[in-house]
Image (cartoon, rainbow, N blue to C red; front, side, top):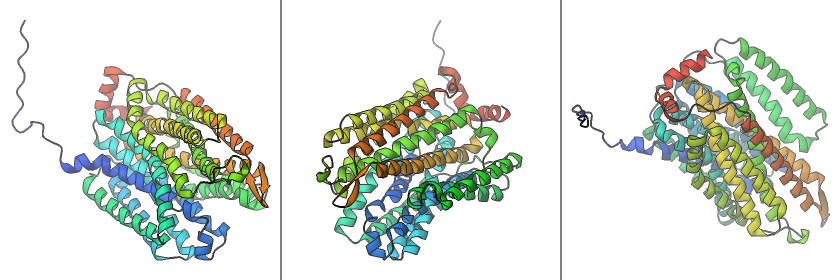
Length: 497
């Protein structure tokens, strides 16, 4: 029997090269994620000098970091839901614009009140990653989607690794306002590129925005994160901190009750309580905790005075360069994460990433005196973070309807943020408790740092266990490809589940 004759292609339907803006979608979205992470870290090298530069106290200056954290935590699920309802590109562009306006205000002013308000505006950019991931799901074919989502999720670590040395160099060799003028220019370029190169997604979930739910979530998250971030300063047993935690329980309980009874809730809690979604959020929280300890402890360890017997006395610029290999590794390993997820499933990739993070902390415990071992251990942790962070959005995308991808990924990013805030508080508590005086100033001991590494490694193992309990991934092979080719049918099935 001869081979069947090929079916001729109808006139006008021959494959053509993708338009320039289609080819630029992934780079533009990824650059927006990197810029967002850079914005979050550029103020860190300034913190020791900001009291002198602004005339404010060190406690007040710390709000330039806290305000961004609080605003990002509140706005990420809110803007994610708005993107699902009103258009993801529209909301993404607005978030980048708010970030840019905040940077311009920082460049124009030295008043601490203006700086704190401006940094709160920049917190809106925390929604860039979940909105971009949702756009990639809507716009890309299945064969390109996995690697693009993995890269997008890794931009958080890449930008953080780039932002610290960049900001340190600017602060050391130029006026500190120059740094914010530079980020303002990059932000304006990002807004223009997003509007031009990214198509508006046709996938919407119309309805009335849940304003009451947004206000309730904001109140609960602010109470929680304010208590966590300020507990070490105000005292964990102080009336203010205990009152904030009590308010968190009451407000979030009322919010949960309201969301279950709302016709169009801000967060679909019935979806969140499904094992595949809920356990993914738990793993995100634990992974965020484990990942953040790496940057926090490494920066303090290598800058510790040599008189401690373990410190290297490095400058902030050299410290940033120590973390740079981790950022490069995240960029290089994101395609590998996508391939593992395609062949083994994102659940296995997430578990593997968490296990690699734990191995990185084991290296840190084995040797935290030699610079090359410190860099190696930090890079191994960054590698595991790449695998884990790249798998999390893929898990969410496979488990929720297309009309809720931005809001669901927004909640997942929120859980990472809560994990990072908790990690910061826990690491600070461990290091304060294990300190000894050096020249009249309390300095963390090496034992304190090793305990922090052990704590982060244990949390990474807990994240690995949580990942392994997530129900199995979508079928492999032809069945999976068939389902990816018909996302609408899969979403209908999910909504009816």
